[in-house]
Image (cartoon, rainbow, N blue to C red; front, side, top):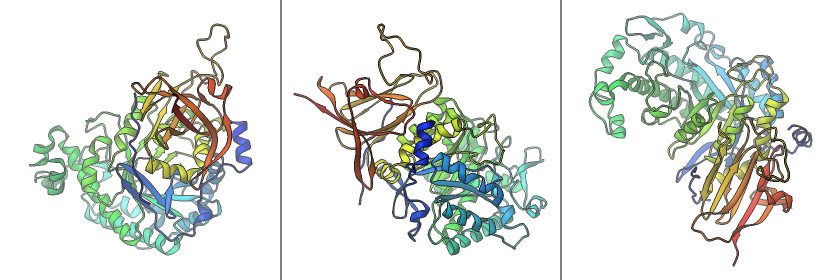
Length: 553
């Protein structure tokens, strides 16, 4: 049984899909059209719940990330139709150090202005991805004058003294130059984006180094021999040298601290100019708590070193997982490990094949503030087999369906998730039933069902539902009150019943289909009869239900 997120009190596809899109029902919930607020976006956290505040109210990022090198006007133009097909309200776009400072000390932000102008015209918010010292653990997006000067901008050293293909986190000149460029970027945003089209910034990209757990230069070796920093010792209740404190993971812990500190210095300098929320993303290596230091992106914010990152980088608002692992059990572990009281859950990169779309629902149910599949532009590039071979109607529609359900009440969902208990599940690889208890009620999700009837009926046989063997389907639930629930999903049958020990007379009293609108529930119709006799069945329509439970006497 899965456990829902605890409650809190807040202070203050196809054809149906196409018709919804053409009818303009996939509401973005106030994106560029509402970009008149000068109130800075921020992240609020309380009692283990988190909210991304945009224009003064909770906002859920229905995102999409473009391909790595689509950060130029021509390829960017191909993204907007894809985002509209998806129903996204936010686009994640790189800005590369090499493109803004091709000549040292001379800055060009013309692409950034193009991005701002186009995002406003297309009614989208923006998350900027700063590709600086690290991009996929490489320095490939640094300017040529950085790439070619190994004395001034040193690479890491391996144990045998060779250069490694990653810049050292101990390079003072590298940090100073990266920081200067990032400050210029944030200054441009401060001066040219008063309406806060950009709502968040990713600082660097997938930091760390593969096949080399730390820099083995003389500078790094001298630091490695010293006691661990006081703030880290206090947070982790450890002491002594890196080797004494971390044993076999000492090299990786050391690199994590110094990479985190490096990124923190850049983020802090940028926030001093414009204090937007800032995050880092992790290149994951598997759900193990203690990965091989040579097999992981050492220094990155993987799930088992988040406490080191929290100590090293207080200017970073959250650490986030980039998920390309299709194994359902692994994905759930990632979501659980990043959804922390001190870490808002966000999935800034997810594979864009159809079978990844189901994981939107458990992310939503764990209180995520945003979600984005990767590679959502029509430039012709595809990272298959990691991602989809093409952006077909089936591929995009798999994400557009859940986006439509949440998009119809985006800000209301963000507010509800900040205030109330939530739960979500995806169809697991083995198709096992998923369930949870919320208050006096048990909520159960089953898979591969038609909307009518029961699988075990002998008198009325049927073929298996076409999606029965496919890795699709999910559900998200919010508990509005003791007996009221908001339910969404696709390719799932959801049943609600009295939990054990609550008495035998628990029943579904009423099921309303509708949506929230500025805090008010707007009913479209009541479900009953066939629509409720066999559970609540969500298939290929973006439906939102408000379910009232009760006990009869």
